[in-house]
Image (cartoon, rainbow, N blue to C red; front, side, top):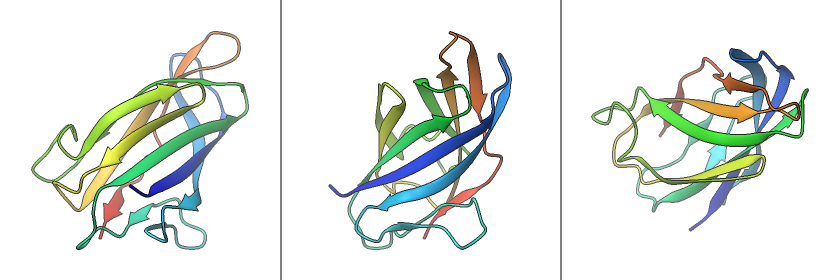
Length: 132
């Protein structure tokens, strides 16, 4: 299964609140994951494709981070994303999920993190991503 990598660069950490982070695609998973210039929106080419592994890595202000969990919303016919995004596995500053493309096209994500001082926060880019 191809793996795409999305790096989230935390620019402001808010304990027990929403952290500001800028996502960037750092590995395209075989040219299947991309962003348009100047945009934080993530596009995934899924039409006629097999499942894709997506790894989210967290870096930036307050690092090192530990990723605790990820949740998805806004997925068509799969409101909490559990059928579309499966097998979440957290390890250190990253979490990996499999995108099965069961439901499409739009999705949002939030990631719970802990910073080097032991404070927790949530990354919510506030953008809607899409499977094409």
